[in-house]
Length: 119
Image (cartoon, rainbow, N blue to C red; front, side, top):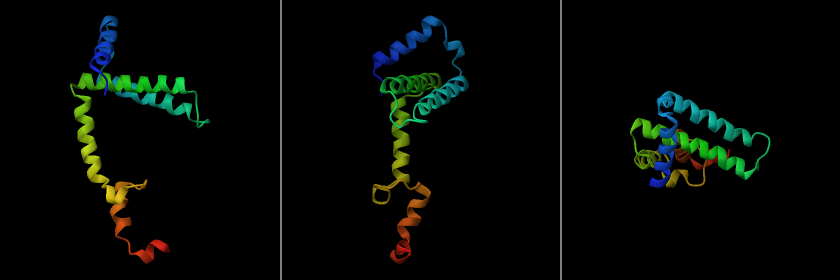
């Protein structure tokens, strides 16, 4: 997670520009999506885009995520750990290890008789 120094720098950046007035949760959520689209665009035609551009777009996404968490009054560490806990329940290692299967299909695939898997 971001260091306290990084969080303070982001807050100061916004404060001195008086931009907090524009940082509604809706606007920040839109900005996250827009910046994520710009990150994805770098991979649109080239699986190995320029690393510096990827880092810049990733920084934009993360920055807006930090601003949104701040606006909502939530701690990123807390919400990430809660989500990780629920995701661990959906994707138990014994069923999900090495697989890209959606959690709703994991149990069903695991419970299939062996002869059905080979067909």
